[in-house]
Image (cartoon, rainbow, N blue to C red; front, side, top):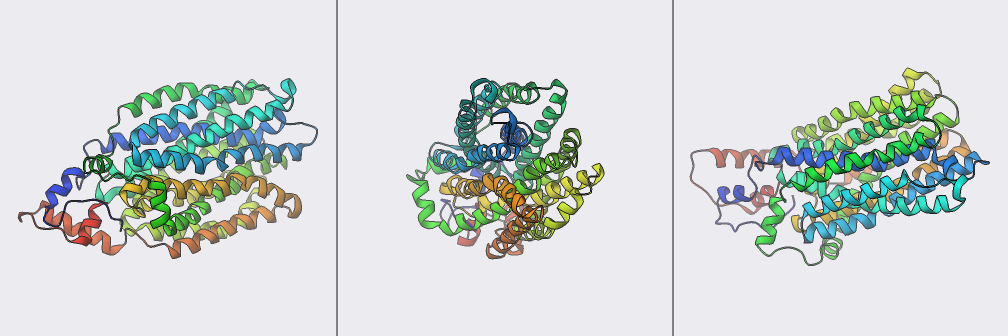
Length: 468
């Protein structure tokens, strides 16, 4: 379990509950929904770029005389946004641990919104030549920085407001914002298909302006994390959270990096690359592809929350072991199903890849990653581990495309299985922060707190559990 600054051993459970009530803060639901809505908007913007890169940007921003080269350049631009996400995570994590979680949430959302609207206004290759690609890269870098800063602040706000026993459920609600954003982004691209020309991809980005205004208004009303406020009142805010987490918690950063890589790089193969694979091989037209992804995203909203809640009952690690095992086994069957070209089969493929493989991992990460780090460096540690994996996943579609060029569909299929195996090994080597012992210990604390007994001292072990 993680440790934090808490009352001394003579303090009562009531005193601990004052800064973090056992049933969570009064605004816990509002915070969870607010963070989820923000995550929805950020995902709409960031993932929408991935859809556009797979379906449109190879011709819009790069020379159209070589389709394969255009696809590679388009995915390279997609990868650049992922590559700068660790820097955004470092900046956002540092500021989150220094000045608070809330300012980072508002600032990252505003920055993301500006960058996304600008994408909808960019000139194409036919208009300005190579400058089109340069401008696209520049805006993508801004997107990456904003998205890198977003996750840690949103998850930590939700985690630190949530009830002790329902951290998985509440962080799962925030994580569910990502499939909602994916659903909305692809719905926008599906609806815009009849517009034709550049409007088919411009309109979804321009519509982001409306979502950003709504998100900013909601996030401005959220209360700061109670645990951050306690650290500030006690003068325990870390002076250099990045240096501290690298010195004391580098092993957890490494473990979470591999855990996260299995999920996000697996998505990059099974969804992002598959989008271009289906279109390039003419196995399905764009409406079928986008509809399949939308069905998977809609189911993913419920699935992410389900997987998160399940970890509250059986622990974080068992769910992750299941998800990574399925991912490792899914590589070859995925492409066999896709190669049938049947619309129903393609929808099923997206559902398994997203609602089962990806969501079963994403739904766990909010609580598990947060619990691996101490409170005063939690945003930095969780964000750093989470976003470092983006470097791998960001360029995975590019690698998958190169493997496909050399080995056919078997190349990306084995790549997906390899990522699943990597995550499986990492899960085995990472401690479960919410196993049977921890769940029983919190139950004991609940009975003591709510029973007729007088306040009693906290043990050192119970103090660590109260950090939940």
